[in-house]
Length: 146
Length: 472
Image (cartoon, rainbow over all chains, first blue to last red; front, side, top):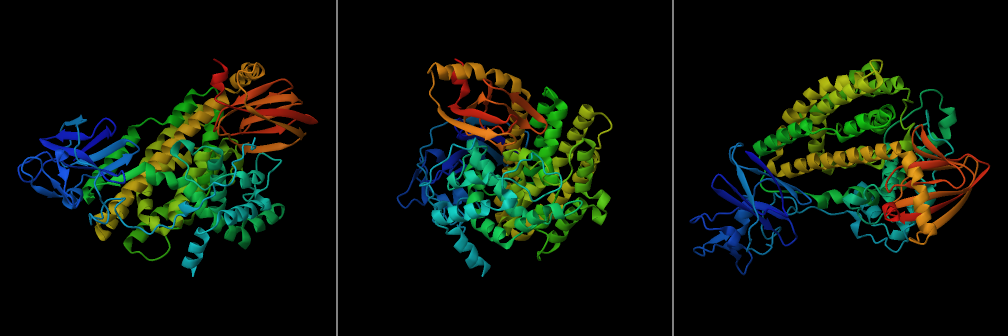
């Protein structure tokens, strides 16, 4: 496996060992590194568009429909800390990765309940009891703690 | 029953939270003190109670805000809340501390703490969820490769803290300050881990128990890791009992300690804990090696570094045990779906460690340059007098012996002595004396306190924001 680190402001496309990967962005801003080639004839999925149901990518080469759920289910393992990404790619560790910034035509995609996959943080349903909805903003901040 | 109680606590109205916070903070054990140190009273933990009702803990701090005043205040309270679950007893007699003992462990304190705890946790640790994102389809082999690779990388990364100590104008003071930061955790070492050894969860439970009994020296008190750390502190001339240096814990040091209680107390975060545990066990061996070398270089061969020598040895095993006997078998048992949470724990403690390293280095630099910041009083005060800036000013009149419990400010401040004498404290055994007409620039987020050394002292605090703007 190859561990690749990149700044997501500068890189949204990775080429390594004749495979391409691109950053897929969800409607909630969650980013995943997914395979960039259509399984039909290897068309560029980063230039695909989304069908009306929001469930399939339409490959620009032959208009083959490529399931969003399937694309997400095969996303590369990745950790993002702010804009810094670390991804694991299934190639030899000595392979050389080319990091690029390219135009991604796909709009932010819906994931989560509609995608049905559940192995990615942010798409897993969890009970939320965190007290974030509490509104204490009415209280004045003190600056007298000298 | 406990579930419904918890949900009720989490649905506190703001006014209720404030009321509970005020009552919690009014505990005499947490009151301001006229002493800097508490050599044998583990319950005395000032939290600057009078300020708390005016603070806003309702929103999650962003990463760059963690070291602000509410971060320090929330971390101090959280550690008190978490450690009410642990037993601390003084070394000698309890009589001098018996009232504090009763107050610290009282039912009222515990119930009030439980009410305010979730909001404080969200305030401090809420940023982690937004900052760290784990995605993709993880497999057991990818996890193993990732953890081993990142652990090796961490071992190669120079320590910012050790670098700060070696470059300090007073390496011995900096090294003692470093050990003080560890003392909050190491003197009750593995207590957070202990929260996860009870229950019933199969072979992994026994593996974790092995780690725990190693930390506890297999019941032989002289080999208990906390005993080794006490010996180290004593050899450095420091008090060796828990929280003697309560006032000198940096915000990030408290946060590191709290993090493990936070994820261990809430068992739904057990998988995250496994990742964090692996990170600490796997990297600590190398860290300990370098700390041991540093201590010997700085203090000479007389310093007792058994604590660190022991960890160089034992944590090589613990790292492997955590991975091969705990993390990977758990993934095998529960499936790859658990991996993102394990990775998250690894990354969270890694990020918090970096924040702590940077905080410590900044504190050492600030403390080292006390005389420089005293000199900067002149030009900054002149800028105010000339009207170049118009900061908010507060004036205080305090009697001899008035001790200002250590704290931080969210922006740079100027302390100006109108009359009298103040000892301005930037660390244990480290201070600068300020007389009438003198003062100092206080950098944002830097821990400091003060004590009045004249019959009366009148001083002013100017909130200048960024003191460098006054110098241009």
